[in-house]
Image (tube, rainbow, N blue to C red; front, top):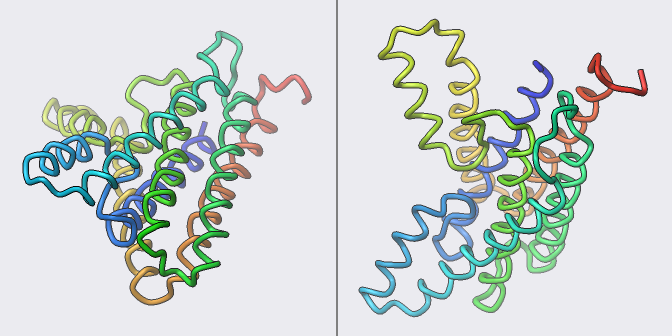
Length: 225
């Protein structure tokens, strides 16, 4: 369980980094926070900003496709799933493939995507986090998320207000901190070394997959042990 927590913390950092990249480099839209994008959508319509509207629709569309595909790949929680179901890894491989495609395009243009590439790159990154969002649901853990974190923050604060032990909010705190650190790392990379921006994404998703694989191997309910 501790290894699974480490893996999902890396995925939260990945979400923060990718959102920062979307905001700074890909049209100013989120890649995982669809509530924010829906607000952007309304603002774009109300202010008649066609370019912003197109970017926001690309992000929302990519995310929707990612969630639908990820849900099909990961499936629903099963009673015999264990700590790290095999289908979670399959979903994360698909997410990794999205980031590889994004990285290749990013490197091909030297980290400076033109107007014609911003929307496709935004959609690919949003699809990757849509996959991640739906894959995490396979764990069947109520309130566990690595992308939309308002609920995580609310639950943590409610527990603190209710004088629950600090140990009960440790995972939530780690996820929120990872999100912030990931966003900071993504912004720093974009400002100082754009070619390394996709490297950060690939390292984080690769690390999560590796730790998840190790968690599955070490789990007492792993049939191969």
